Length: 256
Length: 267
Ligand SMILES: [Zn+2]
Image (cartoon, rainbow over all chains, first blue to last red; front, side):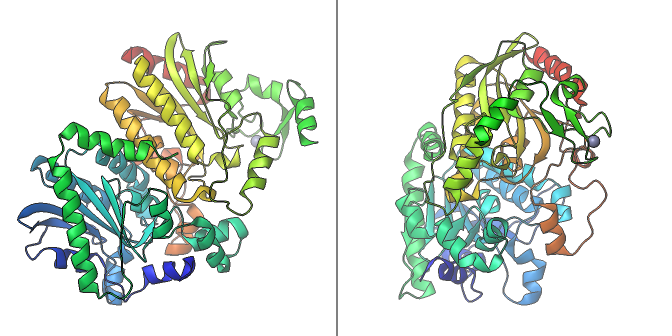
């Protein structure tokens, strides 16, 4: 697959969304709602559960399946209250010393009047700052499309895992093509130029682990993902708090 | 060629600036008297990094750091080399942010000033790295940071590396904050995208110039995506103040005094 085909695969409605991974990683998921400030954003599912006898906090962008659900979940594009719900649950995880697992898969942050009124920029910015010093392990997994600042706000982590056919980009190829070349149809060229594929990002040290997808069923992918995530978590749970945070800080500090 | 023209204009009081709002031209000398505010229609004209530094820092106190750091076309992104070359040719600065140590009202301060005349003030690796180094220096010397933002957002020609600068800078801002040090941001027209969604909104105190455009998503994109009509004054400073995202809107003529007062309360 070329870069743009990967983008399309990452967006495909046949691809499992956040819910699927949560359900397959734990059978004891309890969803928790709301940011305690304004609303509950259905574009993000958050809650707690047990994996391998370890309590964890799970946060996922959820684009929904059927069209009604997709609309009600804003196609998985979170509003400020979604990012604030995520941060609330992360702070709760810190309090109870639970590791945090985030799943990323949507075109990015919600784009709308309400989102701007309620401070979309501020909400993302606060997550970036707070996640950097959250005193519990964080693993983020890009399961589909990782879109811009809206994805980053759930992916400041100790380790970034990407599925083989997921992508992660500063801007959508269509957006890039229409800004630079005034032609959204050149999205395939933009996708190539943006170098947004998992293998490139792994090569550059942005992604830490790639989970193979080719020739595997969703269940097999999920099982491998679970093993990878839990290995990372168990290793990071052993680290003294200071070392955990220094490693996380340096992961980003070293990106030039 | 362009360089020659620029040098002729440089230092010349005859240099003219256009007000895009009313279409009138004024000499820079005249504008310096009016804080770069259009004498005809009151529009706040955009200031480049040097103009801003002259206006805010105590005379002769500014010492620039990392002034020679230059961007590379790491992704070999089509057209980026040409864009960078053009920006370098038409600009005195080598990147979209200028950083250094200065005094403001006698208070020693680390300062960064973004410049929309350099590739729309977009943030790539060099912008992120320069701001990060400034914060690191401020932590080491226990200095407050004052930052002037203006930016079209992340520099897409640097792909994921530009996006990651948002996280990197946020990390060092948090460190500076956890050290009990003051960070003041001044939002100037326009501040958008990834800069709004990171260090522009991370100040302990957030000041905005009147009527500055500040937002995350572009207004045109919002209109196209949602089909909704944008409210009057959408994404302007006053809109942000009303919704609780800005502490102070300050006129340019009083901006330095305002910053000095804030610095003195914290020093
Ligand atoms: Zn005017």
